[in-house]
Length: 234
Ligand SMILES: Nc1ncnc2c1ncn2[C@@H]1O[C@H](COP(=O)(O)OP(=O)(O)OP(=O)(O)O)[C@@H](O)[C@H]1O
Ligand SMILES: [Mg+2]
Image (cartoon, rainbow, N blue to C red; front, side, top):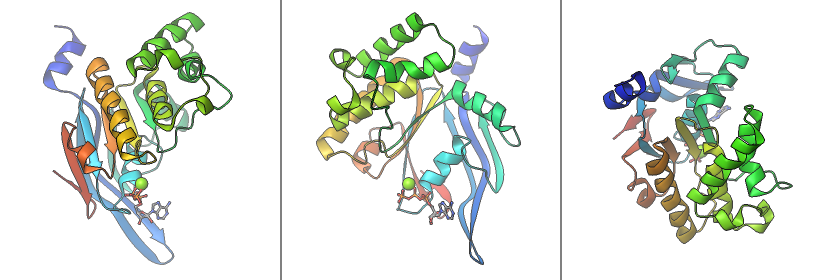
């Protein structure tokens, strides 16, 4: 058994948070949003985070992705503590290990689905051929092989989010962080997008942390956590 297999066997963490605290100063008042929060997301795990509006879900995701500074505590991405790293090093770790999906797709409107999904690979230095091959595989994995040459404006809202997931997976990150990826879709379309997300998780063994307001979707994941009073509750 090699190192990677051994880690998988042991259920190693792709992202961990230890005693994570985030306090915002609002005028003279301090608002503690996250309080000594702990989290471990293991390889291939699909975790849903639910919680009231303003409970700190987006704040947590931003911190996990190294896009915001914690007030105290530590974040480990692939076992590396990101505390105090230079922006350059942090960007490298982020690019190699994480993918992001948001409520709005953020696809580049002038480019086709295939070009959008290829972009992160090309930026990471892949050959055009390799990027194309990988992208077509990921576009097929969300059932849109026949839409690869369409631009975002020629896709439905659900199709655009499926392409956004393909793009987030392009460079084979260990974990995707998704903040309300179906929040802008009607219920039927949200279920459809979620079905593809479950497929991607199975097929590529990528971990996902999904923030959602939809308990029906959250119940389909491996673990549903509620963010309440600064803590995650099972
Ligand atoms: N940059 C900031 N400065 C001050 N307060 C902030 C900042 N960002 C977030 N907050 C506050 O932190 C709390 C948590 O915000 P956050 O956006 O994480 O909530 P959320 O759970 O994602 O809510 P929603 O479900 O509405 O998206 C809110 O009270 C918000 O006002
Ligand atoms: Mg939010």
